[in-house]
Image 1 (tube, helix red, strand yellow):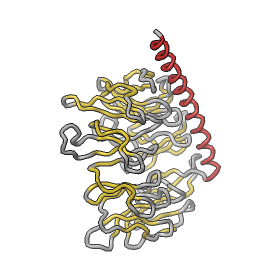
Image 2 (cartoon, helix red, strand yellow; image 1 turned 90 degrees about the vertical axis):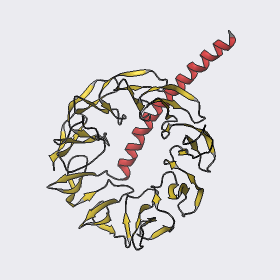
Image 3 (cartoon, one colour; image 1 turned 60 degrees about the vertical axis):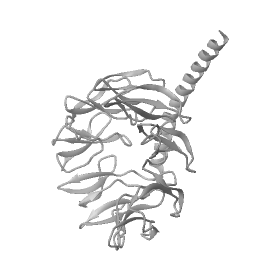
Image 4 (cartoon, rainbow, N blue to C red; image 1 turned 90 degrees about the horizontal axis):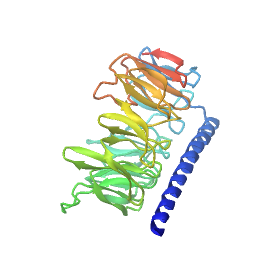
Length: 372
């Protein structure tokens, strides 16, 4: 009886801690957002007459649309395509980096941007700093990731991780890897043992295996939990583990996304809903598609159209868009026209010139009317 009472007490304590943690996460998110606003005003990409530029959150044009393509600002610089050449601009729209013998792939993270070293017969990957200088140049690297938490995954046969000096911190040894998130990265091993062949586990930043390879799918950690899955027949069953590898929410979902704002989107019987960190169903699975919560709202699709719900599952903005992106600093990118949410290859966050793109606020009001 004492053991039973102890377990009940422990479970209650964990539930309370998770609840407090979720409240703190939401409070911290607000604080960070406010700080980011103080440091620099966010800019948002837009398209008009086939050219890209940037607006502020009020819908005022800050950088005129003159680029063939753009990526979001990262570390106060944005990667854009101008006259078929990839360059970096500052927040005034001025070109500040024109890389030589280097084609950037992504913007800056941790002060470095990855790309192709182009003055060789076979392209290899490297990294430039904010002066445009090639600072990491290993002729053996032909696959590379953006830096995350101070490390970047690179491929030279197998995958390993380098630091910002370009030195290997974790030697090349994995068949697949993910970015480091919350100090851990998922990796896939090839092992002659049938028990662990092609299984995924997790390593820390020293390369030490902290959660042994045992999963068929292992997603990144978010809010101290990670979605993992085992294959059952032709399908997968997803659950969630903590950072010790303990199964916190047993495998039972067809698919899922990471926890964000203390809720995770899960698929049950082909429909999507949301659970909390105890595995309790918070929003019933009634949507055709669903994305993670951002700033208190989640994008969900029904009957081929996207809208936004709050954490009670109530529609705040009715389904009416063909594509959407999550809310960012109070506004969301939405698209009308082109293919709809029934499309098989529809991925939230995708950005193309089909249809018309605009921005809405959290009431659904346009702050930038759809343009293309």
